[in-house]
Amino acid sequence: MESDLRVRIDTLAGWMYEAGHLVVFTGAGISTESGLADFRGPDGLWTRQARGLPTRSIDFASARPNAGHEAIVELQRLNKLTFLISQNVDNLHLRSGIRPELIAELHGNITRLRCQSCEFLMDNVGDIIPCPLCGGHMAPSVVNFGQSLPRRELEDAYAHSRKADLFLAVGSTLTVTPAADMPRVALRAGARLVIVNQGQTPLDRAAHLRFEEKIGEVLPPAVAKLGEIMYNRG
Image 1 (cartoon, one colour):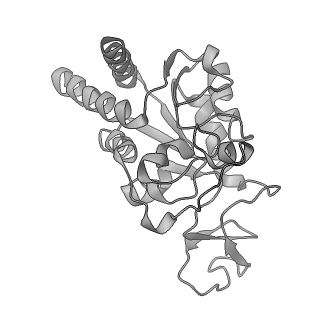
Image 2 (cartoon, rainbow, N blue to C red):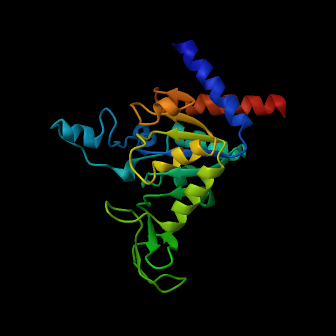
Image 3 (cartoon, rainbow, N blue to C red):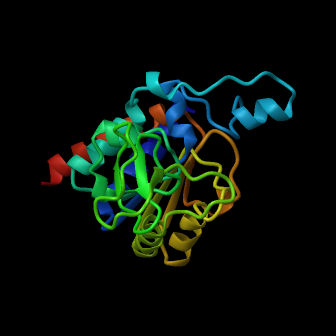
C-alpha cells in the first residue's frame, strides 16, 4: 500500500511538471486538518446530523493554514499554479499566501465584504461603508443557500477550467453545483483529473488518478517531488 501511494504521488508530481495550465479546486476537506469540520465527510457536519449525532460549531478564528494549504502556496512559488478555485469561506488560502488574483472564492470569504452592485471586494474592517468604487451597498461576501454565486469569480472559474490541462480536486465531494461543474468542464476540455478526497465523489470513475488518503499525506510530498524534478531538469 505504501509503495502504491508513492507511485501515485510520483505520477502526480510528473503530471504537475508537465502541466501548462494547472488548476486546483478545493473544498472543505482541505481545512479539516486545520481543525475545521467539513460537511459530507465521514465525520462531517451534515453526516453527523443525518445520523442523529451532535454537531460542533466551526471555530474559524482559531484555524490556521495547514500543510495542504502550504503545498498549494508552494505550487504558486514554483510558478506551476495557474489558478485556484475554492468552495471555502474560511480565508485560509489567502492567509497562507495565495495571491488574490489567483483565486476565485466561489462561496465568499468570512473576512471580506462585497459590493452588491459592482462586486468590488474589500476587507471587513468593522464598519460597513458605501462601496469606494460605485457607492453601492457593501455586504458580507459569504454566499448563503439560494443566493447566486459572484459573477466575476464564477466566470473566472469556468474560463480557467476550460483551459486546464491538469485539474486537481482536493477535499471536495464534488456535489455542490455550480462549483462542482468545474471538473466536468475541465474533463470535457481534455484535462487530466486528479481527485484527493476521503470519501466517494460522482467523478471517481472519470478521474485519471485517485487518492483516498489524507490531503496532508498527498499534496506536500507530491509538491516536494515536483520541486525535485524541476531542480534536476532545470
